[in-house]
Length: 487
Image (cartoon, rainbow, N blue to C red; front, top):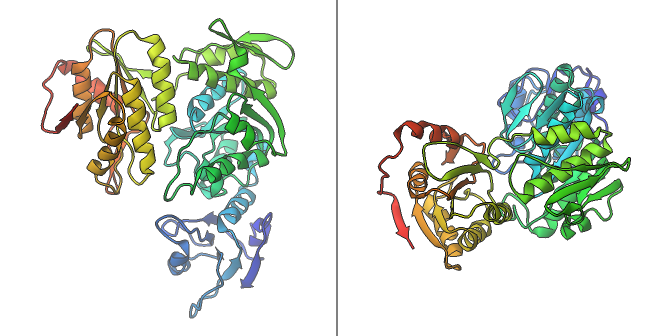
């Protein structure tokens, strides 16, 4: 393929070299670039691709795409393409290079503060029941039809994303359901895609801070961007912020409302053809009924029959989402990915309706994220749980204690009881010993994740596997060296 074939859909200027040269690939990572590839310089949170140009050229890059003019590089002949937005350019170039794979499959994008993953798996199962070979891209995994790859980000970078979609076409996929994060939209990762349908589950304050979003207004705006690149938008009509976010969207809009569909505990949805179906799922909680409603609305606009919708919802399982882990402990133990205040509040409020015993909620918060999230999560758990166990999540580059102190400051705004156990394994042990018959122990925040990130290193840690390893040793002695606060 020639370079000129992929320079389409964005503004660019050739500063030097020729554009009729053959290229072998697209890359935005100088560490893995191959000979003959186009290197797109991305300015990231930690590194600037512009600083890696010499390395890319030394490895045989055929062309450079950058937002700045070509610097003086002695004895180097390379095509230099300048463009104002290299992230947007990367999405367009990659889509063209891989032959616009998204046009060859049904594409559904899902965004929202919470519910993206569960809704994605519900819709994927519905499409599978309807006979579509369906890939998935999201927080848990990337399943291209032949293998499942653990996700690094909810929405992959533009170049990787187009490669995954190309692989799905090669593997015979008919449809793709993907989670689209606000950060992914902000960084134009999906700009090479037109979605057949897009879902907005809800919008709550989240992801506001350094390296995320400057304020709530930007967060809402980024969510709305998905509805500028879809044919039909499906929106939670009970969420006023979500409704306002898409008010000027150029696509057709369809709203679903739990408040209007829920009758006497059942959720009834009227399909486009006038038929009514009862929306049920084997996953507990009203919030999962709402997720099921979103998946039903999307399936309906895609023309999926009611039998596939009903069967798909009843057979959906999502790893790390309201997942019960059986064991010899007297309490019920659940793993859930709730890692922000909105998700935690929804989870605890719904579970309170289903359990008569105590709610014991264990969680931590990620480092390098907004402190306000930690304070709010602490306040939420202190208000809604009978006992909160504060521990470590992914501290990243921060000290665990600094994160815990922020959480505790929120807890202190309530009268809720709490205990701090820094080591997450010890915290889990404590919860299992503390829980009595009829109690529900919620291990929140990690969900499907199989690591803890500390000082740039990801250490293997899977909560479900750890729980299973304890089954033969329960009851056990809980170490107390890390217990520092008990209020």
